[in-house]
Image (tube, rainbow, N blue to C red; front, top):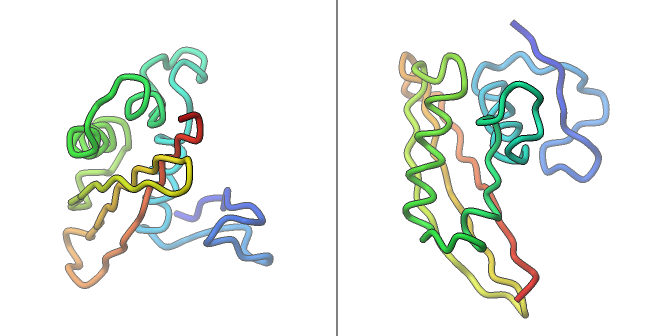
Length: 129
């Protein structure tokens, strides 16, 4: 079933004339973006929905590998049909100028079509150091 594309000008996957997406792995990765970049407590009635990745990594000082594991658990818990996909992830920290940057790389594979996969990178930046 198609979904409305939420990608905006400046998004790496934005396409001017694409209003809908109908690829199941693209729809799933879009759901991951919504989940992880939505601040916790910002969805009325769904206090547990949302990632707050910046807070986890920089305010609570959780290491990147633990955060990567938590992200995968959150995806499996919160996104319908996540059981149709296999998700593996790694995390790395980088310093760039005065910023500390965490990158979580997810490899998402459709379970019934092993050749259908997508790599997704979540970038978490702390420019307040």
